[in-house]
Length: 439
Picture 1 (tube, rainbow, N blue to C red):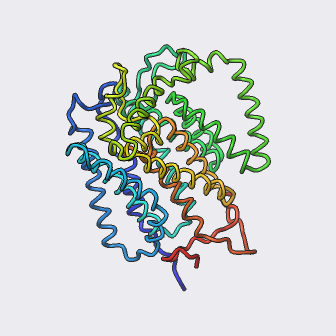
Picture 2 (cartoon, one colour):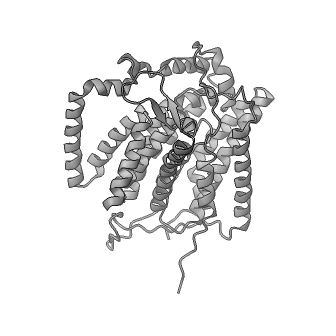
Picture 3 (cartoon, rainbow, N blue to C red):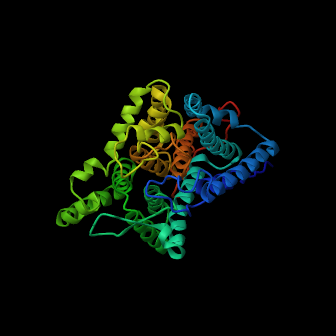
C-alpha cells in the first residue's frame, strides 16, 4: 500500500519568513530615504542578515531534497520572469559600481524568493490551488496583525500622521512598519478569504478585524479595488444567492454614498479637493518624470532599483518629496530595463489574468486567487511589484501567477467528479510528473 508523500515544509516556512521579513522599526524622513542613517543602518542590516540566513537554509534544502520531480516544470512556467530579471541585471551594468552592487543585491532577494517558491511547489503533495490560497491568506493576515501589535507598543511607528484635514482620520494604519498601501491590499485579500471560507463568530470577528484595518490604512486604491474586485468576481463566478446579495449590497452602498457624498469625497480625496483624485497626491508628476527618464534611455533603461532611485531627482521637480520609485509597475519596468522589460512585464500580467479567469470556476481556491491577483494588479497601478524590491505584494503576486500556470497541467478525471467539501468544485488530481504530464 502506497503512503502519501510527506510535505517537506522547509520552503513553506522560509518563504513565509522572508515575505513577512523584518517589520520597519526605523523612522526615516518623509521621503523614506536613508541618507540620514547611511546605507547600512539597523533596518537594512537586519534585513540583510535575515535574507542571508534564509539563503543558507534554502541551499541546504536543495542539497538534501530527495526528489526534484516537478522542479523543471515550475522553472519553465517562470521563464518570462527569469528573462525580465536578466534584462534588469544587464540594464544595471553600465552604471556606477555602487548602483550595480545594490541592484545585484535586490535581484538576489528576488532570486531567493523564486527559489523558495520553486522548492515549495516541487515538494508539496497538496493540491496547488489550496496550498497557494492558504499561503497567500496567511501572508495577508499576518501583516495587518503585526502592525496592530506595533500600534499597541510603538504607536508612533505603526500610525502615520495625515497632514491634510480629512474630517475622518488623523493617521494611516501601517506607518513605517509596513507601507499603508501594502497593509490595505493585504487586508483586502484577507477579508475576502474570510468571507469565502470562514463561518460563525470567527467569521464575524475576522471581518470586523480586516475590514477595520482596510479602512484605517486610508488606502484609496486598496479600498476601491476591493469593492470592484468583490463585485466582479462574485457576479461572474459566484452562486445565484451570492450574486443576489452582491446586487443588494451594491444598491445599499450606492444609496449610502449618495446620502453621505460629501464625506465620501472627503475620504477619497483625503480632505482636499476633487481635483486631487486625478492628481493622486502628486503621483501624476512622478509618472511624468518617469516618462522623461524612459525617453532618455528607452532601450537600455536605468538599471534595477538603484539606478532609477538615484537619477529620478534629475527629472522630478518637486522640492517637498523625493520618490524612491515611479509608483507604477509598467513605468518602473520600462525605466529600469527599457522597452523589452516593459513588454515582458505586460505579458506576465496579461497571461496570468487570462489563466486566472479561465480557471476561476474550478474551485473556490481558484476564485480567491483570482481576487487576490486582481488586488495586486490594481496595486501595480500605483506602485511597482516585480520591478522593485521584494515585498509581500510581490510574493503574493508570484504565488498567484505560478498557481495559475501550474493548474493547467492538471486534468479532470472524467465522469467521476465528486465534491469533497464546500471549498471545492469538481475534484482535481494534483500529481505532477517531471515532464508536466498528468499521471
